[in-house]
Length: 153
Length: 153
Image (cartoon, rainbow over all chains, first blue to last red; front, side, top):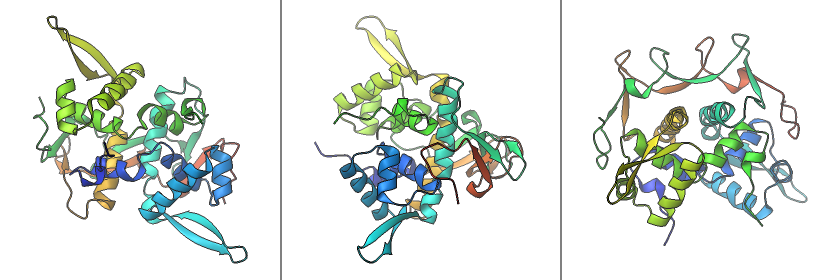
């Protein structure tokens, strides 16, 4: 049985998972935010098998998450730089970080975020672009409801 | 070579991916938000192979994302209900939805969200819990920087 093509589903969550839904992909993107650009640096930091890293980077370049740029002629060497599309994955990464902090890190948060714009330690919250209030499921109406799903109770 | 245990990494993003980093897992959680509870309904809606669904649900129950509850005695039948831990995945799902809307749905957004609290169509944005401003990478300081990563330039 072949791998299901999530990109063909009429759902933006599924389409996103088609691009970054492999286990390693978001850790590669995370490293890129911290300034990692070169294959060997990704490989060393992540402890990922080289063939898996080659495959993931090629996929992420193909989807436009990374640009592959030559930085040396002899021998030819390349680095991987996040595109705007890639940089816009930050909200996904921050919400995952917060969830992991809360549910999987046993109170021993590996990294704290300080929001330099206001000077405070920040929890990333998902807010409404209009009123800036928290987006809670019970306060969200979805239109249209995906046709194959039951109406919400 | 065995599968890398992301839960052992000192990173809340990796730990989150250990729980929900398989391709199907977040689509199962998405369906649960829409009210799907039963194996056959998940299976039909997602078009997922039954053995894969069995495996994913068992993993999500094991990690405490779903409760498995018996709703019928003869024959014994079970339903899967999001726990608080599972419901708190909403921000991850909303940020993925927004990214997919913007980058993979070609302007044809499958679902719009209306924030009933303010009455407006909402884009989910990731904001600072303190000042409610957008969390931009250039305005975030991370402490400590993960030791294996280079200092940010």
